Image (tube, rainbow, N blue to C red; front, side, top):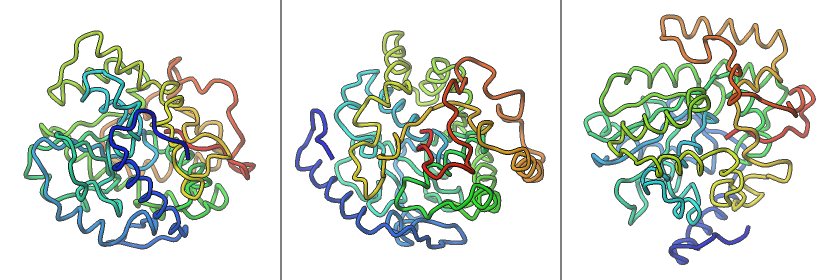
Amino acid sequence: MGEPAEPGNQAEWDTSEKNILAISQNLSGEYFRYKGILFPVGIYSPESISMVENAEVQDDDIFIVTYPKSGTNWMIEILSLILKDGDPSWIHSVPIWKRSPWCEAIVSAFSLPNQPSPRLMSSHLPIQLFAKAFFNSKAKVIYMGRNPRDVVVSLYHYSKIAKQLKDPGTPNQFLENFLKGEVQFGSWFDHIKGWIRMKGKENFMFITYEEMQQDPRSSVKRICQFLGRPLGEEALESVVAHSAFKAMKANTMSNFSLLPHSMLDQRHGAFLRKGVCGDWKNHFTAAQSEAFDRVYSQQMRGLPTFPWDVGPEDASPDCDPGPDPGPHPAQAAEAPPPCP
């Protein structure tokens, strides 16, 4: 698995590594339901999710909330840098899952001792399962959305290498399950519609993967403003540079290469695959696109317009998928790994 660069606390790292190894040996690819939502066995449990619902929240807590495969790790990297005023030493010495631990995981962020303040935590939970105490607190949530077409492609590929997830089956089967919400963490539509109701609240920020791709510098400035942590020009440039896709891909602490193959099998390709917008166009057939659009228009009727609703997502150079579009899902027996 390799050793972390500049470990801050070797005993703490050893404990974390043992927890990961123990969890990785109990991954079956089976799911359980909690209040109607599917969760992978081994990573989560009914007890761990119930604990989140009833957890205590501190007013300076910062939560990153996303539907899976919507840029969670990118946001963790950005916030890790902002909290250190652009200094990259933290992101180069501590694994990303320790910098922003998961609320609903069996080893829950809420149960970890000696967390620095403010606590930075991540969650994929739909709003109805999130910590009730948050809604009466000053704690902050940054919700990151992404074009669901890119989400489903990324999730399909991720399901090929993540050992806690069941085999996705054929692309058509997986797309059908995704549109019905029969995937981990339930319906994408329900997830975003639930959380979008928080827009306008002082302690809630909504931002999209597409906005961040198009103008990362302005996006980081918006996040800093929301957190009340303005950065000078040099620090701001450092955040943008060190959270860029190529920088994350090269960072052992952020590219998930420290995880064992029994948890995440990267022998079939790197976890951080492309980090682009619009890759779904390289995968969807015309029939799949039509089927998706039918459900999308029904489910999202009456909601505000999102960046992916207007014009081609990959119109700007920042969102250019570039060469090597990869195989069509129908030929993806050895599918490449997901976007971050």
